Amino acid sequence: MLQPSRYSALAIVLHWALAFVLLFQVGLGSALEHLPKGAAQFAGYQFHKSVGILILLLSIGRLGVRLALARPAPVPGNPLQMRAASAVHGLLYAVMIGGPLTGWIIVSTAQVRLKTMLFGRVPWPDLPLGQGWHEPAEALHGLLGPVTLGLVVLHVGGALYHHIRREDVIGRMLPAAFGASRRATSAVAALALLAGIAALVAGRGMSFAPRPPAAPAASLSEPASMALASEASDEGAAPESMGARADQTDAPAPDESAQTAAEPARAVPWSVQPGGRLGFTSDYGNEAIAGTFKRWEATIMFDPADLKGSTIRATIDLASVESGDAQRDDMLRSDSFFGIGSYPRAEFASRAIRQTGEGRYAAEGTLSLHGRSRPLTLSFALRIDGDRAFATGQARLQRLDFGVGEAEWSATDQLKDAVAVDFRFSAVRRGP
Image (cartoon, rainbow, N blue to C red):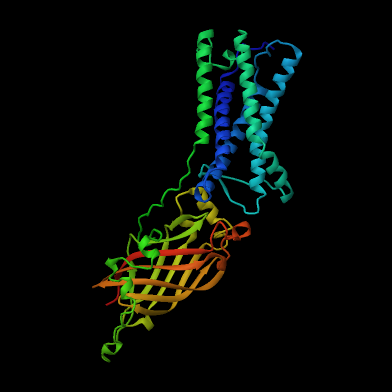
């Protein structure tokens, strides 16, 4: 079969795409160890996984093209040089395919299984392997950075060596328009070298600072948004618009004897309005992680003069969690945390509501989460203006009481046990 003078267009595209993505991944891998623990490091590793799978797919495609399509003959040289060039090529393929595979094995055999979503969008399955594969894969994967960089340097050095000897090795891996002359080939080679260095530096300089979660709009059927603890709520103070301040907590309760026997007060239903917020914050590596829920519902019966007849019941769709990072959200939905496959909802039901100050209340009840039910008290401030009410409040819980964060996540040295819950919403009276 007649051998072509240059590589096919598909081989050229895959070659250069792999070169730049691989160098970017080497830079990214070296940066991960220096990221601050918490959301930034988590997001960095999730992105590293996605780039690794991309390299695996590109490498398999490149190997398939190499085997299926005709390619130029090797440049003649002494046997030692030709064997060395062949060895470098073979090792590069081993690294490009074996590297992502070892990473995939690590993820698939980890104690905490996190569903892999490529670039936060495309689901990727785990390999059906046992725990015994984990440590060997981790040891091999740890060698990839320096080995890959060394092989790339040898590969580029060999190409430049042949170019200096006026052997058209680089030109045949370029489109005909760029490899038509030695001067053009030299210019493109210089640009490619600079681009490769830029890819390495870009990976090394990637930043994964968490974005603050957006507060989504709510609807009556999906009162939206969980947002977390403002500075005021962290200190236990309610916004002034709620008609409550910390120095009012000892104010006397209203005199219920003012009710007339003819017209006893009765708790009435309230409809939560769009624009409400419900959220949580936790601490991971001394960094606050904030999250919200897009879908939750509340059934409220309330009257300040009929606290015995007042009740609050809320249901939260745990799959609607949002923390500003799609891959972290998948982790929260996984069996290691919320386990939405078995426990798709969390529910709070009050059993008693008491007044703690002027316009301030505490709802004592039970939270059911992740298959466990535990007592929980919601502290909230309330202002009622005619048929409209405005509420804001908070609660604190221990995630391990509910089995949220299993296996290695059960340790509290990095991911703390305490979780703060914060909510704010308005409601309209539906009763007479």
